[in-house]
Image 1 (tube, chains in turn cyan, purple):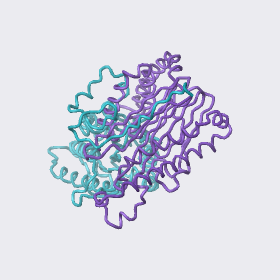
Image 2 (cartoon, each protein chain N blue to C red):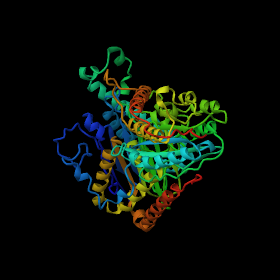
Image 3 (cartoon, chains in turn green, cyan):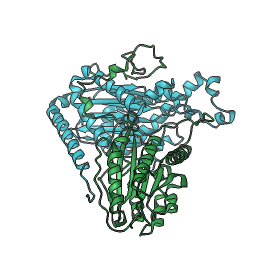
Image 4 (cartoon, each protein chain N blue to C red):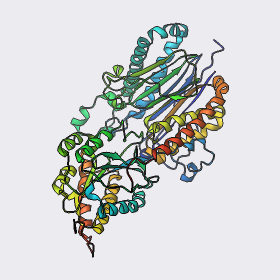
Amino acid sequence: MSNERFTEPEVNENINVTPSDDLNNDASVSSAPETDDSILDFDDDPLSATSVSKKSLVVFFLIDTSGSMKGKKMGELNTVMEELIPEIRRVGEADTDVKVAVLTFSTEVRWMYANPIPIEDFEWARLRASGVTSMGAAFKELNHRMSRNSFLNSPSLSFAPVIFLMTDGYPSDDYKEGLRELQTNSWYKFGLKAALGIGQEANDNILAEFTGSKDTVVHAYSGGQLAQMIKIIAVTSAQIGSKSMTLSDDTGQELGEENVFAAKQKLLGQQIQELVSTTNDGDDVPFDTGW
Amino acid sequence: MFNGFSHSVMGASHEKTNLVCQDSSAFKIGDHYAIAVVADGHGSKKHFRSHFGSKFAVEAAIEAIDRYYEDREALEANLPEYHKLILKNIEKQIISNWNVRIEKHLAENPVTEEEKSKFTEEEFEAILPESYYGSTLVVAVAGDNYTFGVQIGDGSLVAIFEDGKAVMPMEYNEAAPANVTASVCNSNAAGMFSSFYVPNKKLIALYGSTDGLYTSFGSEYDFLDYHTIITSQLINLETFKNVIKNNLSKRSHFGTEDDISLSCIYDADLLREKLNLINERVAENKQAAADRKTAALSKQVEVE
């Protein structure tokens, strides 16, 4: 019996401390040090090999790459997406890890990368256009991937995703069936949705079915407008999407998930419409000239 | 010979709102056994005493396990064949011990007017007293050549056995209604545990953590690699303790802003013997992470 050795449990409790309390080395750290710099100095910390993840936001782009997008539309879209990436990098920044996933749909449906890519590593691949418009298949694929078992599998906590649909035409498959499936997905339900119709043939009513409201649907009839609209929607929705909303402005009560979603979607619609009303066409040539 | 450490940090979000740390943690080294425990008090409005609840959960777990080890030979003889029954009984004992503690605390410390003031009368009457103390609980036990653990609610268990690979040994109870919401205060808590038992395998190190740690990682790979790195440094535990404490603070500060607890028990002799292997695993993991990143950046679409 005298050879037994045990250590009394080290029950680490924390007392309610104020910032002026000294750190007690026997208790757990319950107050931040006087200067934050002291916990930043980790040159010798082997644990720095695994980085700290903040709350994450995945921005999904669904992009029509059917044959009708060939030429000016696809060229302009490719260019603006290349320019957009550095702008999205600035969103969230200190507080949020932003990742991007691009789903292209034409005859086939294909992801640009196998998984969502952190914005700091993301490189736009200039897309080619050909084939028909399998929007329904794209909706089904998005439903499959927006899941904790797939693209949304990061341990770090997630904001609801941003989903941005861009198309220039009418779907060639049964989009309603795909949309019905997608509407059962909780990430989709609580995600921030916006859509851009490109050129005359795009049907804004279908896009409004996708986003849930007309004020989150915009239309571009020229290359200049396309660039402006993509930037407005992508940056605004990423900014709103990465905002933590825990209190309602009016009542001070904690907002539930549904209320946060509704508030964010409403804000997105308002901001998009405000920004769109300030854009101008300049001397831009419409897409559909010569089609 | 077993050794260990445990540590809890208060989340940055709790600092901002003047809440106390809701987490508790502990480790215990016994005679040929060791226990690692962490608990995460729920912290939301109706669980206004969950910082006590998590402390009592940790104490209740250690008390229950110690009781079984009063006759270690009998326990170890029965574990191989009857581990399911034994673990079920341990789970029941933990809940019973926890209830004794919270009832005593409540009797000695009746609810104050200040605590009640946050609710309407109807709201307050609707809350069961045990809910005031609600908490998760993760318990892991190591013997000479076996390991077992029980868990209710979220949190993680990571084990590094003699092959040096970090694994999560818990088998989650599919029947429990989404493990993340289970609590020691649930009326059927004893039936909501998940458990694991690994016989005939030597353990190098075993870790329990509350979910604030897991959610500070971008991938499960990173989470597991983190534990392998810690294991490689345990040989210098006294100096490394501060590094761990600071890293947990950093993870809370820059990550989830949640409370974070980590408890560890390890076989110091086996660790010394396997240190080269652990260091090899750290290097392999680093390479694997780089390979995954390269693969992830490979494009899959038709380009111009």
